[in-house]
Length: 404
Ligand SMILES: Nc1ncnc2c1ncn2[C@@H]1O[C@H](COP(=O)(O)OP(=O)(O)O)[C@@H](O)[C@H]1O
Ligand SMILES: [Mg+2]
Image 1 (tube, rainbow, N blue to C red):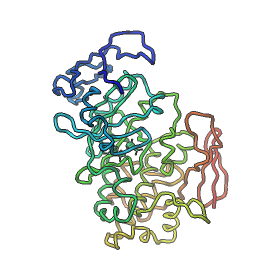
Image 2: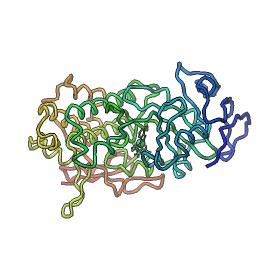
Image 3: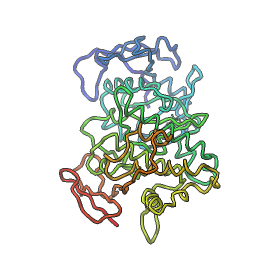
Image 4: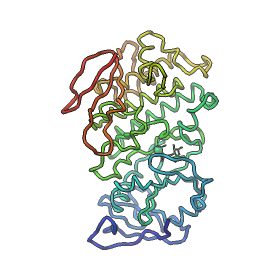
């Protein structure tokens, strides 16, 4: 990695290789630490970056590479806290004592990344989206061709890391904690969908994107990142396809993205957290078995309460747990219009909306064989649903299979 700080530019003619922050003025020191007053950069509505400016009183910092390097002790392997589709994530401590998570964007992702100027302005807009259940973006860093994102550090890592992966992990999550985590995620998503400016569809809700702070309060991570990519890239990157058990079928198949795709992923996550089971299990004889199908079968058999994680030792309010599972099932119904919007799902969870007599229709799972990845031509575009054998047309070329 190089060692040059982001430069000040005024040039008009830009190329991808030599892109400047046109109309932007940066001011910061090359030392690894600098005072927040001099290095606080804000981006105004016309995406100009000016030292000292602030948008709505919010601070967004463009860090120097040196500062991030010092914070993470040279990106030392012992500070690595995670590895995801975007690249590696390091823990670091800034010179003001604040702990941060530094995401080093992977080369593969960089190829489809927007130019530097758009990158910084998109991120600064994201940094204005604040909610107690969203991970706070502190800033970014551009170092030649390298890009870094800087977030608040979450002490208890992610649900995937801290909750899943063994009975002994899940024991630490009693019913009240699971309920509070799910309510927090629902609130964070409601905010993104219905209140944030601009409104944001997350696209990648999954256990590893739900981070937990020191108090196990949930924070949704990685929202809005798709805006960092150029428009001509595929609707589903290989990164997202890696967690396709959460992907709404209509999104996986046709790229048709709505808030209801997030609602679907939330439903899968909810059933996963309440049951403690994997979203897809493999059985040698039966092949892949999807948790949401299992949940739907138990709903029809009126045995949903038995799906609640056995490590809870029946120490949970049955009515509430079953209500949560039913809300999860409402969120994964195959017809997206039938899924509640997030604010409604939240009210269902808290029993402000009664769902006792609400009928739940069958869920549906995207077929991994047919997911469109990386902007190549459309594949067969099919997905499987349970409970019917009819084949229907979804839209355009898209079709889906239904299976018993
Ligand atoms: N702000 C953060 N605080 C603590 N840990 C984090 C933070 N951001 C990411 N991580 C950890 O790094 C891992 C990789 O993150 P990421 O690159 O977003 O990939 P993914 O979301 O696909 O897991 C996460 O699963 C999580 O364990
Ligand atoms: Mg993530």
